[in-house]
Image 1 (cartoon, rainbow over the protein chains, first blue to last red):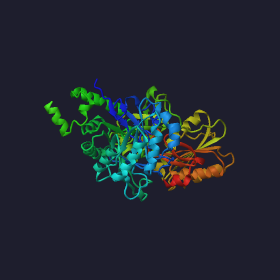
Image 2: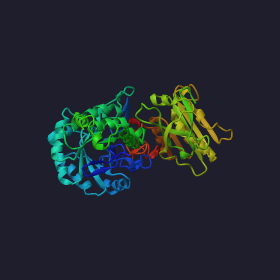
Image 3: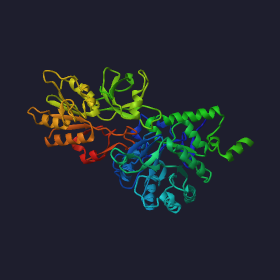
Length: 312
Length: 250
């Protein structure tokens, strides 16, 4: 059976199928429903220094092929996460990646240091790209200098593998990706949700309590796939593809575009078996198509890889 | 059950634990919809079977209704908490607005199985939407009472079901507990009416859901101890816990 073990920095995963932040809570909520043993890692709900109550409801609205959410980083805060949620998550048979977000670099530093010193944390994902919390006019995710500062201080605070979750909502993702790589990020998650809204015309108001939300689900897939293609061709650190991945075919496209691993999120709501289906589907694809290893699979649609394959 | 509401019976076999009154199932109704659709379990006609009472409202409910009899349907559940059943004695008042009857049907069946006395109040905009048949038929001995109200007066009491509830709770030998399910404004009014009379009241809330298990925090309701997930902390809440202004606003 083809080996789909995947490595990102010091994070070794049984499969390239990670569970995206925000969709699986802290993990135990889905115990007995998702088969964690086949997943590469779970990425926790984003943790902030202080607890956050989140946005006023309604927080969800379905869209054709997608979902808008405006949860607003509701979470228990760093102290309760370390004391209660992390030990519970660590009981699950899957590596735990802690997602963290600060309002300024010093908070990212504090969070990375605090979660980084815990053995239960296999890696850290810096979330700079949630569209549902208040921002100054120029969001940090579009600002390469600000992103570099966040990554640098987090890098100095921990030796753990650091992923940075980028936003698709930027005109120059490459500058941000490049700055993050130079500042010491071990991998880039590409990408978060895209801002969007719906209006409830009967009640004459936005459908979401927060007015706008983040678009996820299949509608987002081609958008983020193009970003993965772009970023993977530009940086030398691993890229983790995320955005509307719902089945093996979607995962294969992201891997073929150059993603080392993928994250599934919204698809879990309709089908919690998606991680096992994709893990099995990847093995079947590799077996049928004589793809010997994940190394061969990752980036197989890229020109540089195709030339190698033809001359081999 | 009404021109726009249908009762579906599902054969679950022994794999699904027997749902309790108040619990729901999250149903994959169509491949092209991002989310499952949560429905209250509205009856247990036999062991290994359960009923859903569904009002045709949008794509999801229509997709379910269009499935041929005998279709296999992917269901997660039973999910959520359950109504607190009374110990013994007294009368339980059940107040249902619109499709809210679906959320109270299994409770009414369970109460009758325990020989509890029930007084059901059923409200709708007009007679077409009335779901009075979801409740056990009234009995001559007063064990089961049923009254209906319509906003347009086409059947029963002309006015809001909440006005009927207020009257019932002010009678001598008034019900000792209240269960309700319906539009947020109705729940808020019943919560207010019961709080003023110091009668315990539980409400089954309806909300758009994604995960159904408390992971995504998408279906929250404002309570006195912060936002709670309707799917995993509820869907049944003590109405004294709810922040009513926010319930109505959302």
